[in-house]
Image (cartoon, rainbow, N blue to C red):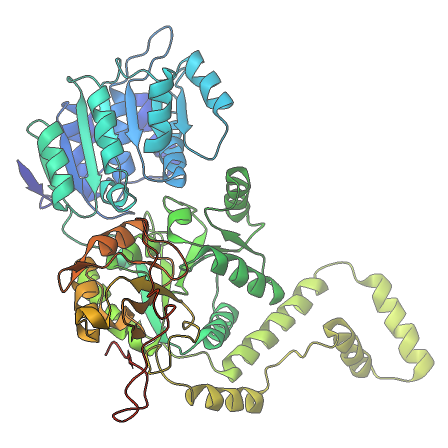
Length: 586
């Protein structure tokens, strides 16, 4: 059974027949009217139906299943797990658990527990032994507790798979199926996914009974509240310059800046801190308790900018996020949708800015097709714009200080002017210079113009005919594949195989160098594990690629390289060519 949103939404949540404690919590949360997915899903879940929800982040899907499930919760003397929610990341698990707690504020003795990796078992074991009504967890940690016997599923009535496509990308699908098999056969299942690949469809067909399918056809339900722009930049330094200028001329509150790698989160956060911003990194290598503190600091205003990877920010929901800045373009359109969904939520407006290298413009077209919205081009804020903002900010500081008690300094300046015969204007200027210190207040127009001219002379993009012994371009990593010249491989074979296997635009494929027994190719840094696994097993000219990062062993016992010539490129025939056998991916 399939439903598409066509009817007029109810005026308020009371139309669903939810209990008064839940309606009171909804009212306290500030919700005024249901979203499309809530309108369609809440009645079906309340009827006990299995449901499939296909919708993007930011559409209100958490409330769509949390509200009706809370409404049907059966309270017992000792709480036992009745609702189990699987989420792909710790951040999303925490967000969903917090939502259940918020919506269940006025339900007596409600106990919600989030269980996830990166945290000691002792606290989770203690809470499970005391009894909980709702468990929200990541697949790996849920499996561990089931095997320990600390989490029993025999009382589970409702099973939620949240962001199933993301669990697929992260390699959790087998774990999800194993957990489903441990739960009672008689249970209600709700599956949510932004996309519906065949493997997710197979799970739905196997485990769901006559499900109601609800599709929110608009790819970006929050797009109307998000002002999207892009800026063309060239090189890491230009990106940093652009980011600094954008932040200076924009009226921001909380800002999320997305990068591809964990290392970049630290480097960019340090760069922003040097510019005077309260910035912090957020990545998977940071201890969980520190990550939670960092998010709380963003919520409270102690930190204004988080520099994050996609996985670390998954499920992050902070009301004060006014801007999402894509410092690095994501690998796919779905990731972009998830990123910008961190702002412009629940009716609030937000800004989404994408920094693009010239060679990445084709990806922009894909994003526009997926979001069904034209993304406006913006220009680098000029030196005059930045300086105007700096002067305005300085004047504002003066105005704010004048509202405070300055009587002591007023007398001091009068005495000084009387003693030295200096004018008040001269003293004010001297004090302003004293406060500013040696750091210049204004950007220098000529200095910046010279730097721009130098950058424009650099080659656009990352693909040229330099030897592979050189370093990869910024944002790229070098990979080895176990096919080379002796196997008849050509650059076009490599480009075609990669582009077709993982649906990667050729613009993302960098330098290719072909050796006797293997080849190297530059690909975007920080590729997901699932993509690497697909490429490892893909074939070129009938041979497995066995893709691995340069310098690492493949997943098999073979180390890439030609033992006869020490892994060096075979020399070209000097009579025919002096150029090495390297090629562009173009």
